[in-house]
Image 1: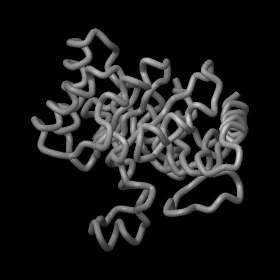
Image 2: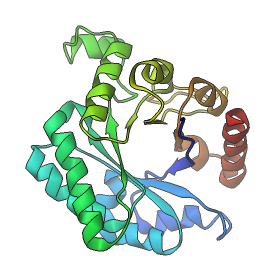
Image 3: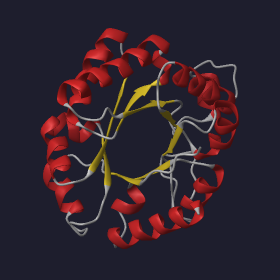
Length: 242
């Protein structure tokens, strides 16, 4: 069974004021899922997550933990208490780290009486090129084979899904299965610049290859009309999934 999730808005801003200035363009009734990452979380702390949740938004807390297993477990216990919908680790941290991350989320969520977040493992960042994989990471695998290998490791270690380029989703579904989340950043409208993302797709293309959930940042944030752009991309995503 394939998972079909939201179109997540990635709000890589540095301040609380910038975050809510953007969000307040939308109707208060709009059910948004907001991704916040290191820049905002390190500046504002857990309170910013609680404020978003209290306003009725779902939160993807993208901190990409990567450390020894016990350290990651303890960090994930704190994240598990918050009540966010998604969070991340690096798959390159290995099986023990991923497993302990999952245990930490479960324990923290149980203590707080909330649902544990879905644990997503980052395979290869969308900024990594095949040349970088070969020459900097010294991997003998192709990009697709590397991503499939990391995704299988993540699934076997208890993760709920992976963050991956849309260009690898078809191979992942074939190798890893449909009972897993394939969350894809690097989503761009047609003719939008790639910026520093080297492996991108439109919402319709991502839906066609089997992405579970999309993450979109600059194309929405930098649009002249962010609300209209969000709705246009959401409609494209939803219609392609039917």
